Image (cartoon, rainbow, N blue to C red; front, side, top):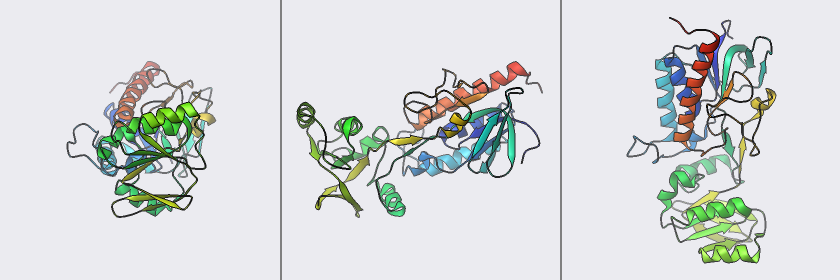
Length: 307
């Protein structure tokens, strides 16, 4: 696709990648964003945590605004999924392929994000329930919206317990449901959960049925109704491109970076949820800004950026 060597290839069009793209283009760098269209931000019906939008903003609308802003300064955005990436040790250049032919870049920013594991449901039914706020994934983002409502966390072990305890500060009607079988908490753990007012229901979860104003979880033939549920089933970090390039990973299967978003591979940077952090739009955007400025300055060390 590209005959000219890019200054930077940004892989991922979520808040981190698009923030970086805005900065990089305003640094007068030649960049390309390859976006697979799977940013978790697009799932958000309304974000009330994002500063500057007192009435909240839909996640897809936010991404569309960011794309428009980046393109105003010359960012090119292509739909696609980068399947292969290599780095030439001699030149330090990266070659990536996303189906439209290879592109060559001096630097690469990985902003590939993560995917939440969903409960077993029809995708359209799941997405419709999310749009209504019946299914939620981010207590930090929208715990306020479930204040004093009937809430269930579907999760097990420490992950499920931690999410339930976090949400307990928003509502007294909190239930923790094991997804696959009985809870395996010991007596002391059960006592602590009971003291916190968190009810326990053993799995397995047989079905989840969204309604008009509530959502039903069925376990062992028993129906349990809630205003919203939070699946706490873990997530999958998109680190396969970092692994191809031999970048160091953290123990949490995220890409390890320094304080300026540099990975262990020269010329390779990472930002957003693919890096261990808060998994928040504001945090991802901040990392995108840091990464883009680091990329600009590192490129300038190798070749002065003169006009």
